[in-house]
Image 1 (tube, rainbow, N blue to C red):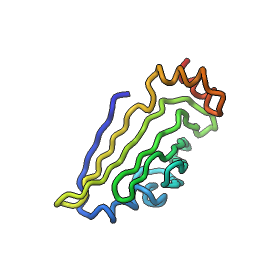
Image 2: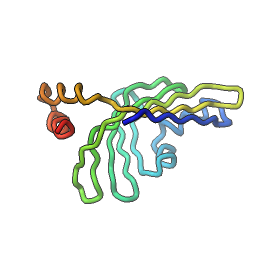
Image 3: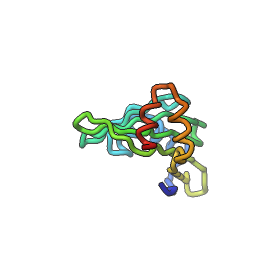
Image 4: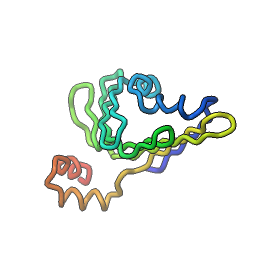
Length: 137
């Protein structure tokens, strides 16, 4: 996956923009999905889209009113309950106060290169070992 970067300026201070990134009800509106998000390091997120697709995430970094990053887990659940392996990506959202309000910058990039995934899938005895192995195949 190539890195995807987007930026927008919102005419509001970071303190007013931050809840749109961290409060489940507001994140739901932004993503167009039903979202349950525990916006603290190690917190979990579940995103359920209207078509029944479900994707899980883990929050990595939180700097209130400044930065939120999370990692999409390497699978999604379909509307029929099937689990499909998909690439894991890392999303970093930063807020910078500017004269016009708040610049919101979103960067999404591959979470693991194939070499790292291969090493982890062979070495891992944890819960994600089979998932990582499926991605490496």
